[in-house]
Image 1 (spheres, one colour):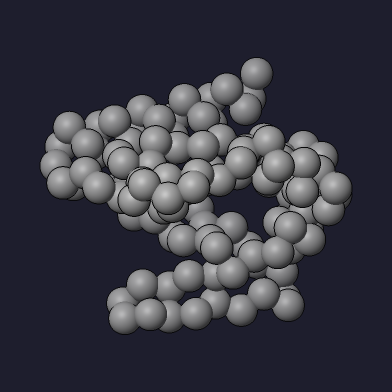
Image 2: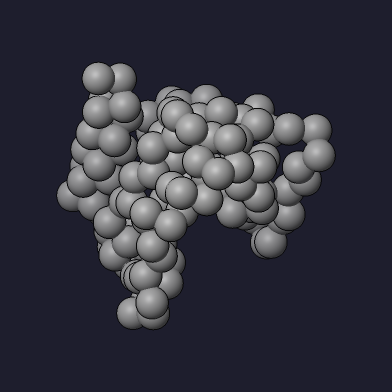
Length: 116
């Protein structure tokens, strides 16, 4: 699911992705989520896919980054690199300045390593 995260879009100023015509968003309360299939991600053709694994944050079985990368590759997103962000930092931190600084550093590192 795509989530327009404030740190990524509001703080870092990264533009939201243009969604394929067949993708629709869902609003829950004041938050909007966009379910994305591997094929839709392939159509978007990202260089980096940032993943915040809620399951890992709450102690459930974590997502398998290698399996996700393989699924995206198989769907045609050969260039997409999957980056697993620190789940507790994104789901459980208090949202203070230290957390924000760490989140910004994590996203910046993921994006800068995709350019090399």
